[in-house]
Image 1 (cartoon, each protein chain N blue to C red):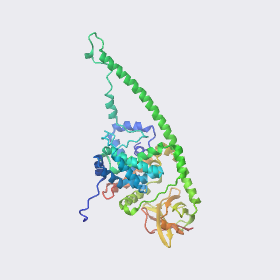
Image 2: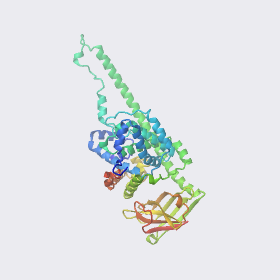
Image 3: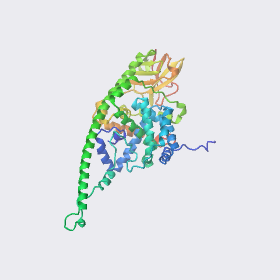
Image 4: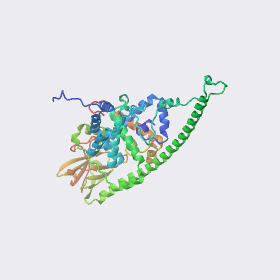
Length: 286
Length: 195
């Protein structure tokens, strides 16, 4: 469950169980921190993209009117998020329980006639009212959470459908683009049964490579796509195959490579090479 | 300025401490250091440029508000920052009106334009190192991590998508993160890469 928490991939119902456990288990808190650090590494896979200067300006302008909050005890390093359950340590819950008024007044408060003094009655009534309100609030809160979960689920389903739709549209658009090209790549002796198709838009450089029949690259190596323009190979992205020997690469061809007529795939070190050094596996032309 | 006089880059923890003291220039420094990486991450999750820039602003405002929560003993500044950013992105993803999203996505084409790499040799090196490690994860672990991290799916949704039992998915996510940590153990401790 900790790995899922580190990835914010818990199911809606798990958050409370986990929070309760974490409050009592320092080893698990430490483990969760380590897993979050590992998960943070995944962020490096995304290509960095410069934001617009506007965003920076707007941000800095807002600082003066944005108050800084003092440290929230115990919840350090847990990002407060609106949708997912906040992980609140049990200590906070316990301290608020101490604010509830005691139900029975102490013996010292008994009045002259042996009955409880008015002050004590007032306190009693108040604590009952508070308790009733608390129960109502708890019920409403729980219903609200449930509705929120439902809404989240529906939104997620729709999101998945859209993702697929966007991907399919991207491929269709590539075919439909006015300056769209297709290149068929055939396997060399190194992989006689390999085959690939590259579809790209020479205008924008957007490209998709779909390959099949490639052997799995040995550890430390990956396949790399090359665009050969004027006899000079330009490096494309590296990719690897799935268990079935298939690969799909979404690529953004740099301007210099968009009118290349020859394409090749070679086996290179995992981090990619600036010039082809390894065995060629696929080659083709438009 | 000779190389011996050139100051060591300020650590993320130092910058966060300065932010916690109300130092606006420190927040700007953190923004300049990480906004491109974070925007790349947000775009991968949200697939919408204006939305991603919006969340980017939100994230740094959150950093400004809650800098005092950062506890160096519990992890790195970058981890805290990235966790916060991703959390906001997933929240945004899960709360957006689905119909609006479908209409917008149909009309917009998202282009990922690579940032100018020469400006930021350190970040491209970090990225290359991490991508190399990721390529070494077993495909099934990488897949599970991806679906969780970039598509924002919950573990049950991943199990449904991959047609696997929930327990298998939990194991894959855990093994994947642990393996990644092992593969990058050296780099994570190296001051040079500041991973």
